[in-house]
Structures are given as C-alpha cells and as structure tokens.
Length: 599
Image (tube, rainbow, N blue to C red):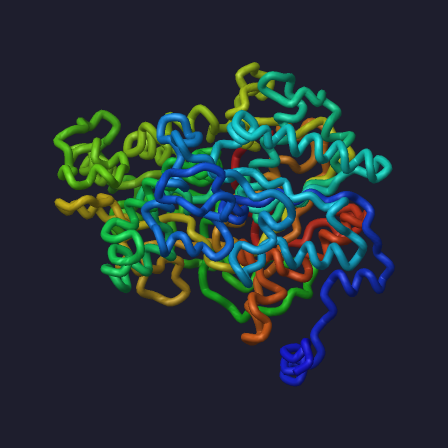
C-alpha cells in the first residue's frame, strides 16, 4: 500500500483535503523570519528521573511523565511518590530529582500518537524553520514559577536563549507562543526578566521591547479556571466525577489499589503550580451570589458551522435568550436547591471560626495524606453549612480545608486586584503571574494575541454534596445526580457549563485582551496592542480526521489549521492587524463590559 493510503481513502469519501497551512503558505512564498519560542503548559512537558529511591531502580533518565506512562502501571505507588514534591518546601523531596526533558521532544507529543506541539512544529518547518530558530522553553511545570529559577535557573536559561536567537538572526525579535499555564509562566517571565537581581533577571526596563515581537497566547487561563477549585477541593473535575458516578467502584479499584483519588490528590496538592490557576479577581470578575458577567447565557447546542465568518456575535454553542437564571457567580453550592435559591433566602453559617479537631481519620489512612484528616467532623460540616462559595470566598474555603498547601501557594501566587500598581509591594514575584496585579512591560511595539477555542461547554460552577464515611475519604464530592431536567440546560452531572474551550472559560481567556489591556490602561501603560482570535469549535468530520483540523478544544486546538496559519503568518512578519484584527464568535466583549474594573 502507498504510504499515503489513508489520504486516498479520506479523499475518496470527503473530496480532496485542504493543504496543511505550512504547504499553503510556502506556495504563497512565506519564509521563516522571526525566531519562535514555545512555552508549554501544565502536564504537557515531559519529566525524567535523575535520582530516585530504590523502587525506581533502572529508570535513570527515563520519562516518568509523558511518553508511554508504562511505569504507572508497573509500580504505581513508587511513581506517585517520585512525582510528588516536598509538602513543606514545594521542591524535591530528599533523594529524588525529577527534571524537565529538554529540546523540542520535551512536548511535541504527550504520549505516542497524541500530539501537542508536533503539528505546529511540522508546519513551521514547511516555511523554513529548523532547530536553530525554534526553541522549546521546557520547565518543571509542577513547581511554582519563581522556584523554576531557584532550583533549575530556567528563567535565566530562557532569557539567554532568547538573547542568543535575536543575536544570531540578525536582530530579529522573537515570537513567543505560550500554551495553557505556559501563558501565566510567560507573564511571570516578562516581569522577572526586567526586575533587578537578585529577585529578577536584571534585564532592564527595555528588555521585552528589544527582544519580543509578539506573544501569541493559546488557551490562556489569564484569570484562572474554576476547574482548578474542584481539583483542589476534591481532586475531581467533570471527567472524574462522571466516571465516579457511572461506576462508583472504578476509581477505587484501579492501579493505585484502594485510594486512587486520595493518592492523586496527595500528589497534585504538592504541586505549587496548580495554585497559579485558582480564579483571580474575586467577585469583581467572576460574579457574586446574584450576578455574573455571563448572565443569561443559554446552553442549547445549535448546529455547528465551519469557521468562515470573520466576526460574529454568537458561536454555535449557545445564545443569550431568556433561559432560567443560572447563578454562575456561585462557584460552589452545597446542593442543587442552594444553587438556584434567591440570595435573600439562603441561610448560611460562617465556617471561618469553626473548630477543627476530633479526627475523622482512622490510623490506616495516614499513608494517604491530605489535610481533611486534620479538620475533624466539625470543620468538615462547617464547610457544607456555609452553603455557597463565590470566587472571593473560595479562597477562604481553600485556606480552611488545605492550610499547608495554601500557605506554600500564598508565598508564590496572588489572586486579588491591585488598587495602586505603583505600590512597592507589587514588585514581589508572587504578583507577577496575575495580570490584575501587574503592569505589562513598557514595549509599545510588541503585540499580544489571545487565541482560544469557543463553542464547547466548559466548567464554570459546581453542585457539591457532603459525604462523610468512616473510611479514608474525601468528604466533599461533586453531586453527579444534579441535573436541570429541561432542554438547553447548563447543569449536567453537578457541573454548570458556560462557553469556552472545555478547560478555560471564555471570560478567563479573553477578558484581558478585550478590556483589561485594551488601549492604554493602568495594566498596560504603554498601550501594547492586543487582539482576540477566537476559533469556533467544529468536531472532526469523520474518524479519519483524527482530532480534527478545526478543533477549539484546549489541547486539540494545537492542530487547528486556522490557528497554525495565524502563527505562521506572524512568525513570517505579519502583525495582528494584517491577520484581520479581532475575530470573535463569543460574547466576550459584552461580558467584559459588565465587569466593573477600574482601568
């Protein structure tokens, strides 16, 4: 059979396939111009073992994260132990060193056959890119952003690599392409590189202006993701909750033996990076008990169309009609009734003064550490009695249920809105990845693009239930039986959805470019131009299309032809204006207008 056999089959069914963007643009005469830097997100970068305990014999420089994941199945507890960080310092536990894989192979494929950056890299190669003008800024995505510098000097490495690429390309500035959490990591980098040593990189206030042409953020969780709250509170988001609802025994029986969820929770709670994704801006951004920016959003999936319109109001996933009022501002509600009740009828008991103690745990649980064991029955009950948590009170909730974790996280991340950005306290690194507590660099010629998928139901708020059992347990879980029970509903399996890319709600991905940084604002004093490029999700037309060339999903968008074409054009010298400026399908501008933020 010829090598292109599947393509013959596909073309016989669907007609000729469009040229990949690299082929199409090479025919137009586009050539490699600006060096390109990739910044991977959480989970997509490979991690390998450099030093380990006896159980990890034979795994030196083998991937423990990414690749085939074979080791999880062979020695699951050993794997979880090595992937965890020290609970006090957030750095390596004694006797264990896991380090990021370097080079383009670090994140081209997450697992065999599952591309992350590979399709973009292959298309860039078609217009003349190669290893010398492409650089993967790999970092250990488990640790806090500043600690990647403290432990591995990663920020310094990125700085010197960018300087080298600019110097060897005849002074051409770089185009930076961060994905997912890499977007926050690169925000941190832009502050770090200009800040004076020892806290910063000492590059001076013009460094970004001199070295960066454009930052093309893909699926950026600028203002955090509600999913991270569910992850930290009960180690679950919709995918796990549904699996648990369908087969309650499934998650308790697989590779880790009896307490998978707790082992996963114990491991991920040692990763400081997960705290970079807690929602930022509190009720001002995400809404309160009775209002939210996305108010009136309807979740009726309409017929998907292919992406041809340049700008539109509504994508195929929903429209603003007179749907039953969803209180998106109530990020966590204990009980479906509570989620729907008018705020004047809510009876709440404040949990903040509740006594902790009377251990829930029996002695056998201590190998599965999570902080619920220290809370006691009273503490756990108090959390459920408070009934409703908005983005503001979610922070208090996390401090209450996971004080150690939040103490570590609080040293590295912040979630507020700055009153006065000239206040000296904002020179500290913990503010650098929060766009509401930092200024963009003084680089009027640089451009920032926010590029993300829309048209997929995305987690925004949760209905929880209180589920005390005497065993080792997580006392709160998403109530998968909570359904709205009518057509076009936003509540399914205990999760309220809104427009987004399946992981990041549109509000988080788009608000800064739509409003916070639009024009000259206090967050963008030099008036860096910002553009929104939305990609309306269209699922693959058939199985032969694999993950699709028009996907808007958080990771699959990395194979979206329209997105890849935008990136290639900018790398070859185009500006955001040349691409056609904003391209919007969602209601991001309308929602941003409803947010009352001092600019």
